Image (tube, rainbow, N blue to C red; front, top):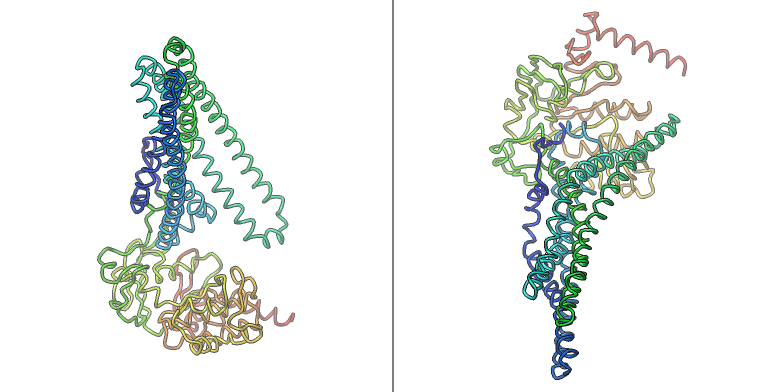
Length: 603
C-alpha cells in the first residue's frame, strides 16, 4: 500500500488548504501576529512621511517651531516598530513550534493506524523525511513566511497608496512594473516545482541509505560491501547535486530577472522625479525612499515564491501520508462501540476465549497477482496447538497475518469466538494476542520498561512470575542492575538469546489467550533453545497457540500441523498421520532429522 498520489494538476499553492486545520487551532495567536506585522508595516510606511515633513517644513520653510513634537513622535514611531517586531517574532516562533508538534503528532499517530503493507512498501528513510523534514518546512511557512508576507505586502500596498496620493502619474509608472514581475513568475513557476519535487524524492532516498548504512553496519562489514554501499550513496548524492545545481540555476535566473524588474522602479523615479525635485524636494525624497524601500519586499517575494513552490511539494507529500488509507481498518460502527487504538472503550470489550475459524477464505497480498489461499477452511478450537511448517519463504506467515488481522481476507471470513473479526476492533483482538518474533525488537530503555509494554499495570511479582515461566530469570540475575539494566538501542546490549527470552516474557506478561510463536527458537543457541522449548511447553497450556516451527522435532505433539509449500497448504494433520502419508512433510522431517544427527556426530 503506497501513499495516495493525486494525478490531477494542482493550482499554485493549492495544497496550503490541506494544512489549514493545523493553523486554525492557533488562529488567535496568528491574528495578533498579523496585527503586529501590520502595525510595524504602518510605521515603516510612515517614516518617509517624517522625512518629507522635515525637508519641506524645517529646511524648506526655515522654521523649527514643531521640532520637539516631531522628535517625540518620531521616537514613538521607532519604539513602536521595535516592539511590534519583537512581539511578532515571538508569536511566529510559538506558532512554528506548535504547528510542527501537531503535524508530527498527527503523522506519527496516523502511521500507527496503517497496516503492515505500508511499511513493506515504504522505506524508513522515506517515512522519516515525511515526519521531520516536510513538517519543518510547513511549520516555517505558516509562521515566519506568513509574518513576513503580511509586512512586505502591506508595505508595498501602503507605499503605493501614499505615492498615488502625492503624484498619481509617477506612482503609476512605478506600479506598472508589477505585471512584468507576474509574467516572470508564471514562466519560472512550473520549472521550479518540477525540479524541487525531484530533489525531495532523491533526498528521501538518501535518508533511507543513511538509515541502512547505520542499522546495517554489521552486515555491511561482514559482507565486505562498504565499496558498493558507498558507490550507491555517491550515485544518489551526485544525482541530487545535479538536480540542486539546476534548481539553483533556475532560481538564479529568476532572481536576476526579478531584481532587474524591481530596479526599474528606482530608475523611473530618478528619470521622472527630477522634474519635481526643484519645487517639491520632500515629495521627491518620499518617492526615492519608497522606490528603494520597495526593493526589499520585491526581493523577499522572489525568495518567498521559490520557497513557497518548494514547500508546496512538502505539503503535497505530507498530505499524501495523512490521506493514505490502511488496508485494514475498523468500520465506523465498530469504532463507535469498541473505540479505536487511541481511545479504546474497554468496558465494551467481550472476553476472548480463543476459538479461531477460517471460513471459505481466499487471500492474495495487495501487491500480488496469485492467490496464496483459495477457499480455505479450518477450525482451531480453544486451547489447540497448531504448527505451521515449510521451507524458508514458503509463506508460513500468511495464516498468522490473517489471524492477527494484519491483513484482511480477499474473500471469506476469519472468525474469532464464532464472530467475524471485522465486527470487533483490531485493538480488542491484538490485546489478546501474544506475538514472539524470530528476531525480537526491544525498545530503548530498561528491561523493566520493555516488559511493562506487555502489561503496563504489572507488579514486580507479575514480572518475576513471567520471567520464571519462560526460564528468563538468568537474564536479569547476571546483570548488575537487574531489571533496571539498559538494553541499548534495539536491545543491542543483550545477546540474541537474552532478547528472545525477554520478548517471550513480555508477551506472556499480558496473559494472552492466543499465542503466536514465529520461529521463536530459530536464531538462538542450543542451550537457549532448550530453555525456550521448555517455556513453550509451559505457556501454551490453556491457550490457543500457533507455532511457526523451525525444528520439526519440537512440534510432534501439536494438535494439527499445516504444511506449506510455495504459498499453499499442501498437507495437514497430526505428526503420525503426516509421516504415514510419505508426502512432503515426511521428506522435510527426514531431511532435517538426518542433518541434526550428522551435526550431533560431528560435535
